[in-house]
Image 1 (cartoon, rainbow, N blue to C red):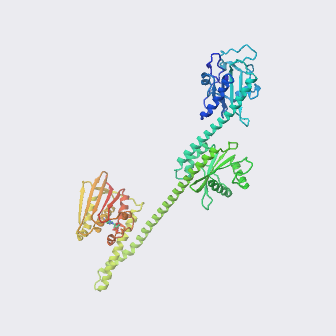
Image 2 (tube, helix red, strand yellow):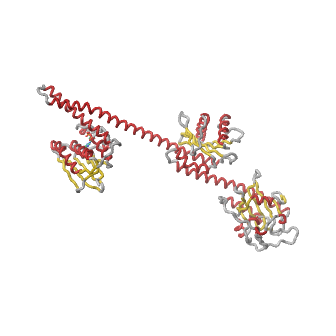
Image 3 (cartoon, rainbow, N blue to C red):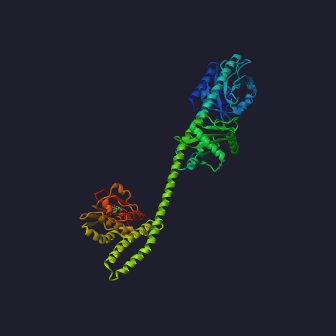
Length: 608
Ligand code: ADP
């Protein structure tokens, strides 16, 4: 029996029985995952020892790597410790079985027929055979190869050390055959259960990876990250995804360099299969050797798929619909090599779950793609707007200069009548206002041009504000508004363009004065805050509603507040300020409420 599995020097617990020949243990083999399977095999082995009367019984299973592995041992603890998990090459066992007497399911090889090299088997002869013709010899081999319904070897039952010291008689053999048949069924069940557990484990692992990858932004990325897990988890040879498009042809996505370019007919078939299987929440498996078409397929579809499988060198495929909610979004196709196992129900179930995960991935990818496109379109629109502003303001510049020049010339003309003088004054006001708008537009496009970076120098902001106050002061005095400047610290230099920073201060201060009713106050503060210079301009003016604050820094924005609209303005000032501040690497904040005054705060990088 399993003498061939016993390690050197090993002894069974019973001193009357000796250890068998040695076979080194080999590593590897899959852990026995189900304790139910192990228990069932143990019970059978115990039946052999206790009921049939043998010292040791061991049940082994055939592994894919060509070894028999002992999974259940009954007999002494020593025997169990020694034998459990031990592995023997199947070929060697079968070589010995070939010399056996055929006892039906059992095969018996008398020790005289065994060709054993004593040195390598390490025999410890402490078992004395009886002195009778049918005495059991320690090297006798009694084994039942266990085969499945297709005759494939799936395991073996090895029996050793009969309690009566004799080779089994006819009655004992019949009993042992019953145990062998039972062991055969149990081994097949156990192996199937083990294979199922392995499939579940692999498919689950694949699903976890797909789910994690589903957050990626493109389907190609999702596939690239989960391809290996899918191929391994599903024992697949290859895979691709066909996405569906409303009214369109859809597209094929692969994660490998392999290009699949299916015909229009195949794409249409993929589309149809995806929708039908999503509706039914089922997969579709197709085997190149199947005699008839799978359900859902016509004979033409079948021919088309068979052709596809043959051209790919594949034996079968599993098509799984991808979708989210009611929407079917695509089809995942996994292929297997010829003669690979059939697609199991466990795998089909796992594939359906993955179909939902990949469905969400497709939705994500589409959403991202749509957002990306919208962003690109908005950018293009923005560029177009900037170009339009730049072009129009340039085009206006020359004729305006001509108008202003001629107006200046007319200033010196004497004897103009009253009506003409009134008209000229109106033209002059209008032309100057237009010139301001054009200047603002030109500045707006200049400070919004990424090809025109800031050339920074230290700018003394205190000086800048004092200069601005000289100009704004006139308007403030007219409205009896007190403007105070408070500074904190000596080094209040910002790094930037002096002209642009002058515009920032001028716009903020003139707005404060413009939007503050007569007799109230404006406070300007300058301070250092680490590497920043902070300019704060607080007024006691009309304030800005929370809603209006949202659009404050966009071009041409004017508050909805009628008190603000009553003041002259273009809505370009704060847009210019915000662009200048941000191209200087700074930021601007506003704090205000309708009727409660406003505070604008500008943070600029301090000069080194
Ligand atoms: P303009 O003053 O030429 O209209 P701005 O871009 O400077 O353009 O300002 C945009 C809008 O923001 C103004 O129309 C005004 O309604 C509001 N605003 C700006 N500064 C203040 C302020 N200090 N107090 C109240 N409203 C203000």
